[in-house]
Length: 314
Ligand code: CA
Image 1: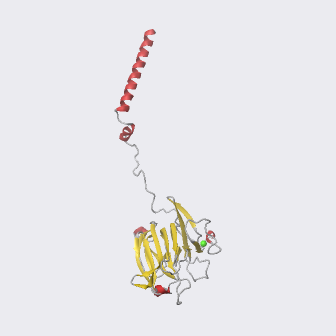
Image 2 (image 1 turned 90 degrees about the vertical axis):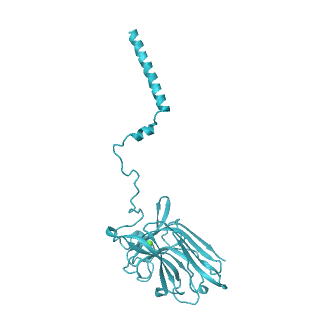
Image 3 (image 1 turned 45 degrees about the horizontal axis):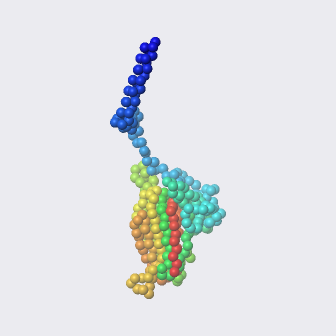
């Protein structure tokens, strides 16, 4: 028995030595565990280990059929149903019973939601003014050097479609301002940024897949209808995050220092679209609104984030 005990001990020690020797060696010189595992074929390989989310799914989009008005969209007054601390700047002007202002958070960014439907204006007399949920911003005077500047990022998910170019589209933002000498509205629009639907092809033929953004500009103070021109600026994809900057103000006319220029300069997705407003001497104000406005058919869905506003007054 003594001998067998000795042999057992010997085997145990030998095993320990071999064991330690093997692992010391493999730790220092052998392939790392990672390398070993990399070489092991995956018995059930995933063809797309990190799939992108389906681009067709937009978490804050209203899809499918809808009713013109909803109980949670029926604000009592134009300003009564804003969120307590909205992420978007400006005073709410809600004239739609389809929805009230809401917010969504996507990739850490909080977006203001502006959804309206045709015929949903619950604030003005029936069949008069177009529905809107917009925000108004402080007004600058008409002294040289005075201006207002709005910045934000937008996404367009849906715009009005009423069957003809003149009736189609929804405004995402507008420059406004009163003038001397009468004519037109008491609170005239000067330049409106109007998004028109672009439909897809094949199975997407009935889907709005992109939007053409036009500038609808007055040709004269008080001009509306035929008194405006509509100029194509650029196309953006549906849900494409697009930067938007609009500055409206008065400056000296470089060709005649006794005159001034009333400018309306937009930068959309990094592309500048500068324009000088007609009859600058008649202008008395610069101001900006943004959100969603006008839907003569269907539904419009605009999103705004990272909004700021700056007013300089001389
Ligand atoms: Ca509402």
